[in-house]
Amino acid sequence: MEVGRRVFVVVLLAIVQFLPKTVSSQLQRLETENLKLIYYSKAHEFMVPHTARCFENAFSFHQNLFDYSPNEDVTVMLQDFRDYGHGGAETVPHNILYIGIAPFSYTYETMPANERMNWMMNHELVHIVTMDQAAGRDEFFRSVFFGKVAPQADQPISMLYSYLTNPRRYTPRWYLEGSAVFLETWMAGGLGRAMGAYDEMVFRSMVRDGRYIYDMVGLEAEGTAIDFQVGVNAYLYGTRFMSYIAYHYGPDKLIAWITRDEDSKAYYASQFKKICGTSLDDEWSKWIEWEKQWQQANLDSIRKNPTTPYRAVSKKALGSVSRAFYDPSKRKLYTAIRYPGQLAHIAAIDIDTGNLEKI
Image (cartoon, rainbow, N blue to C red):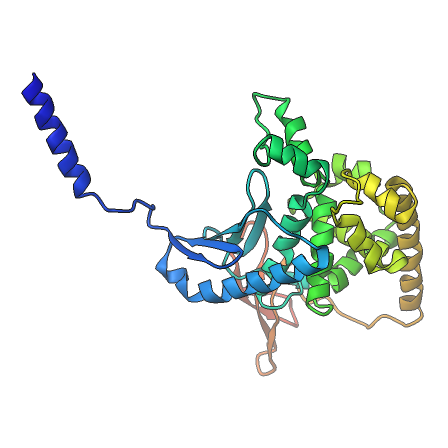
């Protein structure tokens, strides 16, 4: 029996000896002063240096703007699991970014932006700073719990511990996305959603049609739930409100509101009242009234000029439509279209009859 055990141990050691020295699931890694960048394919290697530079540039900007001194590096995971680009940020229990490297969809110019890696780092690192930045009691409880506490479903009290170590993580999504979109636009010299035509058009249309503009509670309770684009209302309302605050109180007060420093309040609404001297609920109501007056003035200006005459060509709505090419010899428009129930395709549209031919 003893001999059998010895043979087993010898065989096991031999197997271990010939195993690869590192078992890293074939992940690649690059580290800089503040970054741990992880990617899983050699095919992504070409964009790693550029991504790291974009990260360090954005990180340096936010450090100076917010006086942010993190206690840990930020881990960035590059991935290519979707057809369109995307980004995500988390700070509990550690700081991590998920970056989808695919190109973004710019249909309807909903997301005016510069180069996508630079833009995503500018945007996503705002989330890291606004959620992770600690002061006063946050730092004390982080030392007590040896870091930031992640809430556990089977331990409800962990939610309290998590809040004590990371209070700004638990703010509404409109607050997080609004501040990030405002700063992405600022850092790009005005190129971004905060000054984009799409957001302006949405609220102008709401005022024209007499649509209800949600208050803060309504936005969280219903506005984000009925949103068919999975959360876009948080971006629309948050960006618009943040821009309103910057317009009426100045960018410095907006930054002071979202900064967590020694003189700040842990709760975002209490910090707003300290900085702006009014409650967040009251200011949100003032914004709604201002938005209605602003957009009504725009509509009145538009109505001073006659609309351009037009003739409907297609007999049905075509959904998303690309730029079209017109062939005068055949009197046909060639364009790419995409609508429910059909795969995206190129079509020829007869401008006289409206007949659509799938190509």
